[in-house]
Image 1: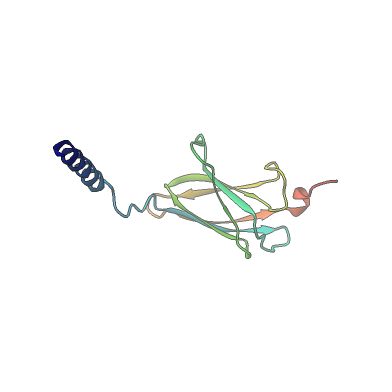
Image 2: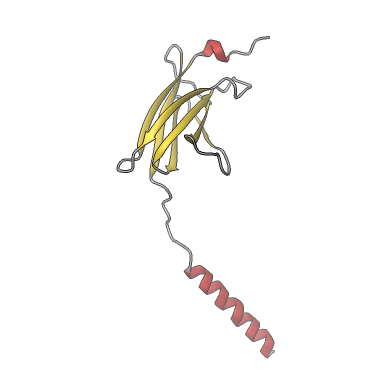
Length: 128
């Protein structure tokens, strides 16, 4: 019985010490990029995939992307200040080769960027 009590006490102590080391409400990085993806006529492109990566830095980990809403708008959050390549791929495109890129700078003092990416729909059509 005594070894069981000691084991439970040890487990409880480990759980309590682990809970005390967690950082509550970590907001992440402050940067935000918002924007709109439009076609060559200026109409919004819904369901386009918008990828973001730090400019001139190797991609480490998962690729970050969002999908535009019905009005072509997107929002990417938790980015550190710096330069980013924002890439749009229309929903009807079957290849990453059909993409349009825009550079965005997020300064240290105000890490917010807004971009409009115009997609030439003639280039992104799939030829039969």
